[in-house]
Image (cartoon, rainbow, N blue to C red; front, side, top):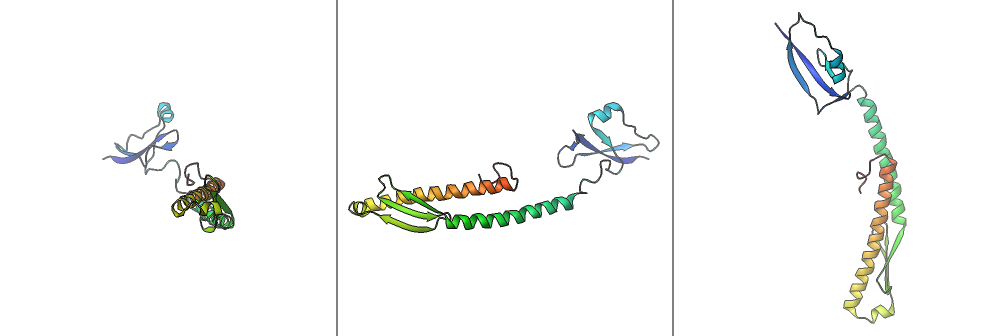
Length: 164
């Protein structure tokens, strides 16, 4: 008669893969002893798959930390949105004949057109307005990205996960 023993493979005290269990048949009359080389190689034998404690023992604490982080992100995101809504960004065409003003939320606030721009005709004026709008929009979205990057850093997200 043999007993099935679950062997969990560890490398530098971390489980390899999701769960690397290997089943071995061991005779109950021959208890397994770990040799020095087995301890050094990181192989652990445990009946019932235990040996290192419960890996989910602190799951509640981790979930509480995640919940606190979510609350912090929500509060800070509302502050950032409010701040951006109150900030204005101006964009101009190359000759500065047209100025378009947007909020940090990309809402249009104003468009100023000089007499000189009006004299250029409808088609050219349309191009100038579009050019000014694109500049204001680029400034506005750039500011939003910067603020969100700051927020991501504040809550501890690694670079690249904060919307970069």
